[in-house]
Length: 421
Image (cartoon, rainbow, N blue to C red; front, side):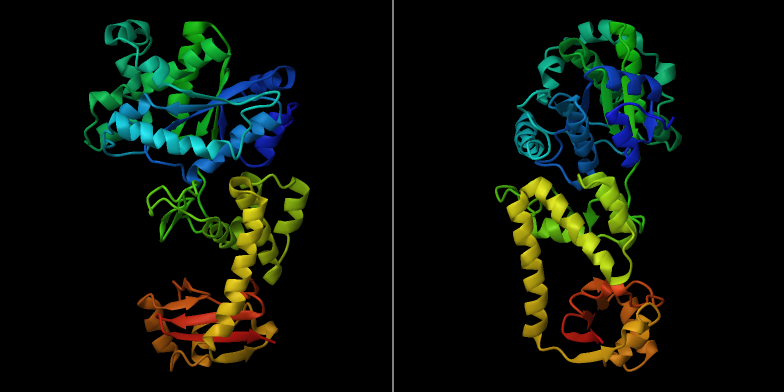
């Protein structure tokens, strides 16, 4: 279905969020005729969320902007079990104190993206409110009778563990029941009719939709996003330095702390092929403007990358922090180049796109031959603008040019500049 009537479905589909939906037509009708309340669950397994969760957070933002009511469900209860989805081993069991500490850190993220006041305020709720108070026998009689072992062992997580002869504890086996019951409680308490999530949650979401319909007799919907990877096939939000976390709180461990400048740089370093898609998913920039930006070619694609970095950083840290980060990046590059007093070699602009990194390394005096340059690549020592070169077939592109310069490095001490003329 593509001819949507509701702002919600138009936005989510055109911006690349739609992967699977239990009933597209039904959800579109509900969103165009009523206020849809939808939720996403976030288990409290770390003291903050990372960029991998940003797709889900942006969906809640679009839900609210289209007139719906978002619910942020913190998994204070389900974290005690541990979601086995996409995992081949049992998650470590966290103490109540660790879960509470993580929950406090996660809460800080959401107010940057969604409004908890206003006309259709978002709701923040913890599933420990109902799960912690459920008696075991009561839960088995209430929910356990709605599930069959036959069906549960065919769910992707259980099926994969069994086929690979990997252990799955009875604790983890209960997770789909608890997550499904969350939908039942949110439907009763807040009239929630939509659960959103990533594609890895499809099995849990479908089960929750089915349980809510059977226990409450209400029509509800499930909606998932595709797995977001980079053009190079990497996992979104993962870098050589680790995960890109969303909290900029120095009180967090150094592992989790990212300054606005580091966050801005993460988005600025986006692969050319990802810029348009990431602008649609992670910013509020209009689709017409994104179409203009992603059509830029050569060195001009850096304009789109800077816009992506500005917009994404503004959402999380504010416009002032984004502007300061952009200025810091510019000064760092310009002053760094001047301060290093590096040897400079001129290359013609029309060579970009065809000049190989091997020849460029030789031209810059960083290698005596193509063979030596190849050995530097194999050793992981050759870099273009401080990014490691992984193949000898790499050519220098217009998008490598920053302020008229391309920086080449071998190791930590040998550097040269290629000035574009």
